[in-house]
Length: 234
Image 1 (cartoon, helix red, strand yellow):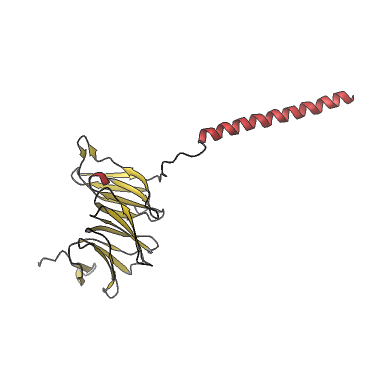
Image 2: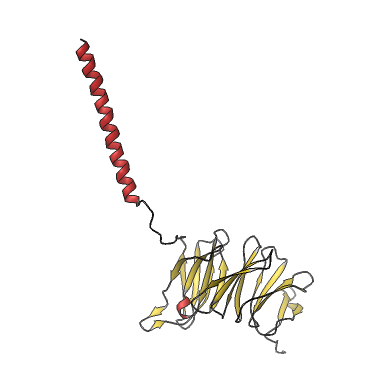
């Protein structure tokens, strides 16, 4: 068997078990490939700092996205196929608008090993090395909604979170911690940024209780007043 260059992508016919296309164009190792939701494009993330989009009919390069200052380790499509998100060795994530070709940069604490769009909620799951941990970010603004840090021992982080993915139904996520040799599965309940509401929930309950007492008191007073008037008329 011949060695396949790290910068080559092979397309396989699953039934025939044969390669039907060899995609060349990257100048360094290809770290991840991801099909678009409709299957018309294939995105590839490479250590040459670029993302390439391949036409799934002709296997020609449809676009090359540049902007990362380090190797691109992961890429994923938005469910509507209008955006791509990527994670890089440059401690950044980028949200690519495929209609305009422009990208928005989101800072990360360390290398971003994996990125994964939720199929039904406006959030992206990201994992990384050391302090990057696992982050759930708003898919539009990049705001960090929740951070999970369970792979930390007494001396600090235990290896990298090499990959974190949503389950197909979006109700769970799994995270693989490298040197810890552990996979964790989480039940997913979407949190919100930790901003205190202007009126606490308990205060709303108290207000409703007081209002109820006032209304009941006024109703009782009106009933008693009517009875008093009737007695006076007699």
